[in-house]
Image 1 (cartoon, one colour):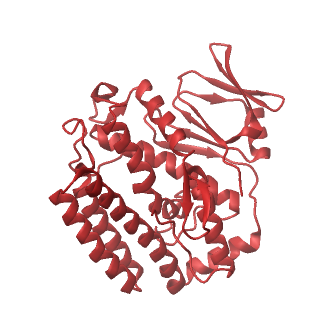
Image 2 (tube, helix red, strand yellow):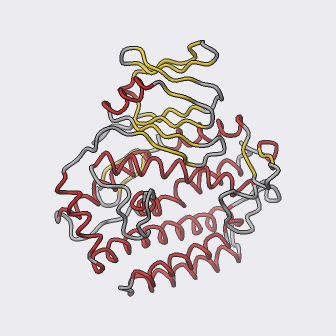
Length: 340
C-alpha cells in the first residue's frame, strides 16, 4: 500500500522555496523557517505571492512531488509536474473507454452513485446525531429517489441532470448539518468564482484542496486527469479529477467544513468582503482550515471493497488504482468508495 505523504501548504506571503540537497527549504525575508526532506512530501501547494526556485521545481519533478500554485483566496492558477509516468497502454485504454458512450456512461454512473449515496449518508448521520429535521428528512428521501433513477439510466446527459438534481436537494438541506454559528455560515445556495459568503468561500477552498489530491493520485497511477467520463472534456480542465472527487465531496470536504463551524474553530472574523463582493479568508483562518484538513487525512477508515483499513488521505489514490484496474479489464466495474 502506498504510504501517506505530507502535503506542504505555503500561505505566508513573500515566502521563497528552494532546496539544499534532498531537503526543501522555506525562506521568509531570507531566513530559513522550515526544512523538510523531499521524500516526506507528496505535494506542495503555494497560495498567493509564493515563489519557487527552478532547481527545486526540477527536483520535485524528478521525485514525483506535484507543485500547485493558487491565488491567495484559493483559486487554481497552475501546476508543475515532472515527466508523464505510467503505462502508455493504460492511457490509451482510458481514451478508448472515454470514447465509448456506453462504457463512459457506466463509469460515470459509478461516480454519481458514489456521490449520491455518500451525500445521503452524511444527511442520515446528521439526523441520527441531531434529531429530527424536516429539511434533512425530505432531502434524504429525494436523494434516495434520485439514486434509483440513476441506476436505471443509460444516457450520460440524463445522468448529469440527475446528479445536478441530487446536488440541489443536498445543498437545500445543508444548513441542517450546522448546529452552531448558523447566521454567519447560512447557505442560501452554492456560488463560486467568486464565493459571496463565508460558507461558500470555505467549501470552495476545501474543494480546491480535494481536487489537488485527486489529480495527484490519478497522475501517480498513470491515468490522464483531463480525460474524464462524467465531466465533459474541456481544454485545461482536469475532468477525471473532478469525476473522482465527486464521491469524496460530502464525506471529506463538507464534513471538514461543518466540523470547523460546529466546533467554533473558525468564525465570521476570519472572513472579509472585498470591493468586488467576493468573500475571502484571513491568513489565520486559512491556516486553521489547512491544519484540520491535514489531520482529517490521517483518520483511518475501513474500505468496503478492499476490506482493509486505509488512511483517509490515501482514498483518492486507492480509488484511482481501482479505476485503472477496471479500465485494464481486471474489474468488471468501478467500485466507488461508500462511507459506512
